[in-house]
Image (cartoon, rainbow, N blue to C red; front, side, top):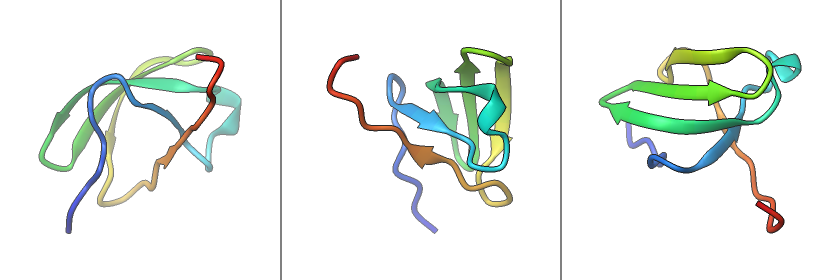
Length: 59
């Protein structure tokens, strides 16, 4: 499986929308570390949890 996240990308966790928008800090295999605006830093296993890229031209 190919994961298409790079440091600096903005993402949301559709299962935890209350976390807000997060910025990808690092990607190591299937582990993505994201700093969320309302939940702080989280390490997400993207083979279990699907993150969605957040596209916003104002950022």
